[in-house]
Length: 269
Image (cartoon, rainbow, N blue to C red):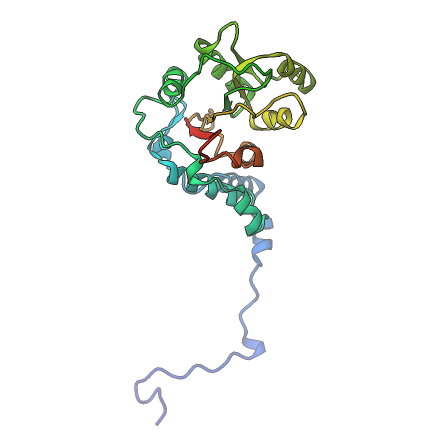
């Protein structure tokens, strides 16, 4: 008695070449068959980090409110996730050199005011000292503020003017109309307490011997909560996050993270 006669499920025989299902389009051909507009929309969506919660982005205030609740460990992990995503071609050893140690990051999660331009001076006064002073050496600030773009750097500079005096300049290290050569000459002549600029411009000034010095540096403030009109912050865009991490991972800074003397702290505002 056969399986079908017994009420069971008949055994499936292997398909012969002549009865094989018709080949389907490959994934690549499916993508090519899609309208260009649809493919562009998919690429646009995939650029956005998956772990950003839209509810945390206050478009009206231009603030990512999640940053305020992150302690040192969470911030170190947050930056590391993006570094791994944006620099996926790096080896494990190279990635390890990019990661920021938890001990380098000051825990500022106790700060309850809004992280906007208005409250930035009070934030620095709570977590820093000697803000109205400046080292005697030219181009050797005690505080560096890292901004997402030149326009934002200008806004931050204006917000910090209360710390400026005749002997301590709040220096704008980046502006579209200021060429690198001009910025180098300005640094060499300026006694600054606070320097404000974009990651790549700060790197360029540090790399030029005698322009910008880290000898008297005590803190680096990352303007991390600010988001632009597209709800992107300095940590959410490859073109700003990568040079920012390269800046913070420099040996001249790293050796002072968590040190007993000449300590340098990272503050994520």
